[in-house]
Image 1 (spheres, rainbow, N blue to C red):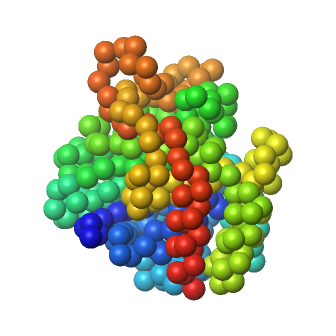
Image 2 (image 1 turned 90 degrees about the horizontal axis):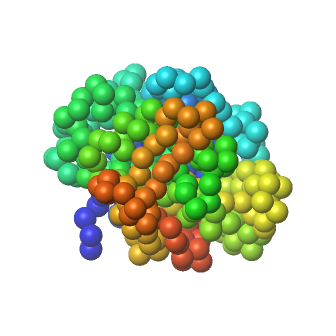
Length: 315
C-alpha cells in the first residue's frame, strides 16, 4: 500500500472542479485533504468560496476547512467564465446554500503555514484554477518551494491550442504572471493540459453511468455536467464536453492512466496576441532545462471507470 498523500486543493469551483473535489473526498485511503483554498477564476471569489463549501457538504465533508484567497490576478484585470459555468459557477442543479463557514485565515497564509509545518516533501499542491494563491505564497515565503512534494496542475495546452484565446488555456490566461512565478519556482510540476482533458468527454453513456449510481451526489453531478457540457458540445460539436480538473486527482490515484514527457514550459506574459500561452519545448529544440512533466495522452475509459467507481462511494 502506498503512503496516504497529503494534499492541498487550490480551486475556483465550476462544475469540473466540483468533480475533482468529489473524487478526492471519495479517496481517503490514498489522499488526505489538508484543506481547500479558493481563488477567483471561473467566477468571482464570493462564488468560488460558496461553491467549494457546497461540494464539501454534498460530499459529506462539512468538516473540511475552506480558506479564501486572492480576489483578483496579480497584475491583469480579472477575467471570469460565467459563459461556461453559469452565473454562480455551479449552475445546473438546485442545491441548498452552504451552512459551513469559511476559515478566518487567508488561503495564502494557510498554504505557507502548512508547508512550513508539515515535513518537507510530504505535501502536494493540486491546482485547479488560476495560480494566484500559489504565486502569492511563493512571493511571501520563498522557503516553501523546496518543501513541496509536487505541484499537479490543470492548466495550459500546446498541441490543442487554447480555449479562451487561440493560444491560451483559461487558468493560465487569467493570471499569466502567477503561472510564470510557479513555473520558475523549482517545484516538481506535473501539467494536465487541454491536450489531455480534451480526450475526456462526458459522453451520454458515461453520464448515464453516473446517473445509475442513484445517490444524491451523483444526481447533482449529472445535472451539473449536463449544464456544463452544453457550451463545449456547441463549440466542438462533440458528444459531451471535456472534463478538465479531475485529471489532477486521477493522476495522484492512478498515474499509469497518463503519459507525457519532461519538458521546458515557459509562460508568455507580455504579447497581447499570445498572452497566457504555455510554450512547451516538446521536441527539445532549445537547451532550456525541463521544469515540468507535460502530459499528452490519457486512458479515457480507465479515467471514467475510476471516477464513476469513486463517485459511487459518496452519499
